[in-house]
Image (cartoon, rainbow, N blue to C red; front, top):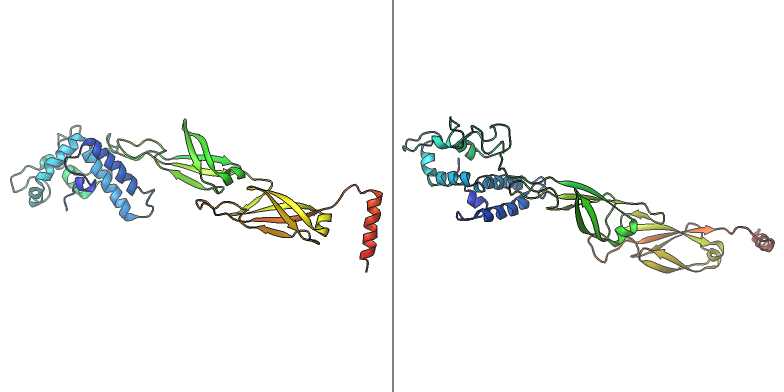
Length: 311
């Protein structure tokens, strides 16, 4: 069994102050946190080592015991790893719990709680993880993650910008990136619950809900809208102004345009999330509208047209 150098795990010198230990632990805990490194066994192992090192070095009494142990580690190995060694050194103070408690700690309770400690500590301090079934009072841990939803109009999702939401009684101002999708979730680190005993804060997960817009149908980065066109303009052609999310656009309608004709406006669709300057396309579906309340003269003219079209 190898000796664990907890100062090396936290990348610190043995002269490190309590404040330096706390800051370094927070930095490394965030770096190797399972939420940041999903399905990464190496990061998970490092995360456990960092937590175990902080569990000892952040506590004055535990750190003192550990420093005393480190100086005599080779004698401990020569003694066979447990109990009283042949070298004449009394290791029972670090061994299994006796009347005085675990490794010199009073109270008959595992001072480290039921954390997942290594064999190194199990051997030295006695069965870490069995204990009393309660978490140690000084055990560091990440804060609780929070969940929130934010409702946006399609235009707000298009433009992005600052918004304020209230989570657990706290007002939080965020900047929304243009192009967010309905159901998309973003993570804000350190905006969740406070960490325990120097551990990192939890994260805030915000899920966006985009309200339906009667004008547009969104498919990925593309938008589709229906544009009503008079039968006269469809037959004879002409110009028409279309309102888009980026402003009015003038389109040309060719003579004899058929009902349901689709036109494509490049770059007039939805912005691509986190890709500044990139946009999808806007598709226009032309829908012909028929005149109502015809006068007698209009009916006569339409009848003449109908007669001319007879084969």
